[in-house]
Image (cartoon, rainbow, N blue to C red; front, side, top):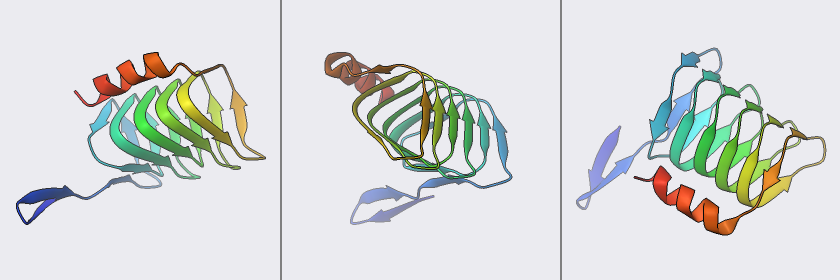
Length: 125
């Protein structure tokens, strides 16, 4: 949905609800929340929240990510926040990583600001 206020367009966030299964790549310039199951890659220009019931089987590129659910794949973001219910199996590329007690993470963390900046600019193109 897009609206207009004073000549500027606004977009509503995208929601994939619990019980919804999506096969394929998802690209969005706006904020996205996943409570369903995605089998494919995500490229998100803004923020991404993976709810407690959310499952991602694929690679993710976004500006910032908050994980309450499960991710099986590599994640590239300026900021990654894994909450206590969150699970990630894969490689992380980030400038900032927060992991709450109880969260599960298996993989490698790469914190390279120069490389991440190059990849972040590519997300928005």
